[in-house]
Image 1 (cartoon, rainbow, N blue to C red):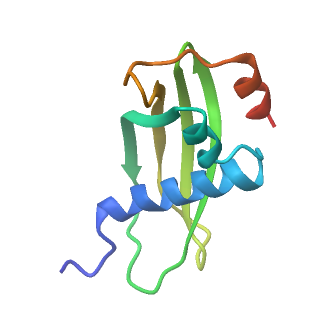
Image 2 (image 1 turned 60 degrees about the vertical axis):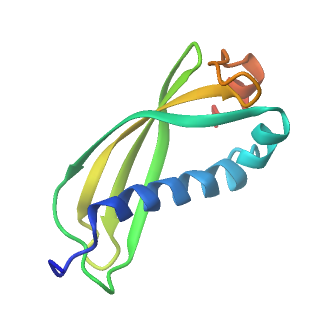
Length: 118
């Protein structure tokens, strides 16, 4: 309607990039968490829109873990327009690791932290 990509799609781009990074870079995909009775939920997100993507643009996404604390992990991200290499958005996701059985937060183990500390 406004000749640009809807703001919610930017979140989809980051989540897709994050799942890809979990599997291909950390060798600890989301499926492994689910099989262990765990899952990550987004507790908070911030995003700063710098410029628009329009239909036909290709987004490149960089994500990285900023910090860990208890059952939480903060993941920073930057989204670029592939054609211009300019930042279109940046922000962070505040994730909480929870038990799929109880729905309660689960403290990050040393194994999880070491596997994600690439």
